[in-house]
Image (tube, rainbow, N blue to C red):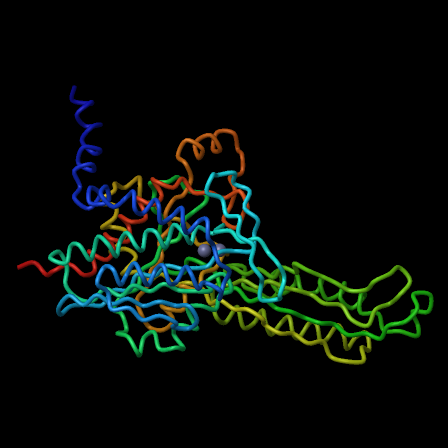
Length: 430
Ligand SMILES: [Zn+2]
Ligand SMILES: [Zn+2]
């Protein structure tokens, strides 16, 4: 009997939790919102309908709403007396992926990409979960103004997937036209963590990413007369091998770094030496000094290999997309992790090592705001346990098969966001 009581104690306490209970009456509405968002994803920089839906939700809750910040960005302010300003962020965009989850609410959307191509669109990164949780938190916090003081700043950010939306909002006055927050918080769903769990990483959590487009020039001609040409394919081949030494030989092994040539294109036929070869390289790191060294190293190696081959022109390298490393403020992270552990239990709130993926949430911290982004598990717990047993690989974020276990994921995400805001906006003890 004693053992039974101990086992039952935690869930009974949890069910009685007022915040968790307050999700019940709004859950059906949040579920409908999630399904609507999932069915109607929009590409980065095209989030017209999605941002209008977010702005409308905030207006109905009494927020002071401004739209079209840095593209389709939305800011909603709820002023509730003197106190700190806390920013909660959600991201709006989907991805050019054809959904293959088989769920009845799967996206059928086809859109035109920035390059003018017709592409299927899917919320394959779970940004629909983030928006639903964000609306849920805004609703609960607007309904419980007696429990906090200060300013709640809701930020719906466009173009996360191109790594450009956060910076565009900042450049458009996010922290000058609106109050600069004392804290910023966000969540991201996790495709390798069961629903109901929350995870955090203190300090550096997600890597910086630079997408480098390089062109190597030669002098084309007949494949039978190589001596009359400068072969850019041979220069490219040597360059790809030499680039591996940036991480293997020039980088401190204790500093995480990746240089991956993900695409190489040149030539059209067996017997033609082309004029040029194009490379696409992803560069990932944590420290700004490492990042600069890798980018400079790519430029140096490509130029040196071209010079060694007597190329008629220096190669060009362009960084087409950039996202800095995400740093979770350690004091804020440990404060929120301790609070979540106290309310959800220590096994439900776990610490994870950093990853080489990226998030432009990083920009808010770089703008001088103590910021943290936490993971929220998205996998059906039973599916997670089976995969662990069998060794099966679960669909990752950005997979056409990724579909979060919606109710437990949404409920945990709403609770996490709301509890974080309440912790930071709590009224001082009388
Ligand atoms: Zn993504
Ligand atoms: Zn994402």
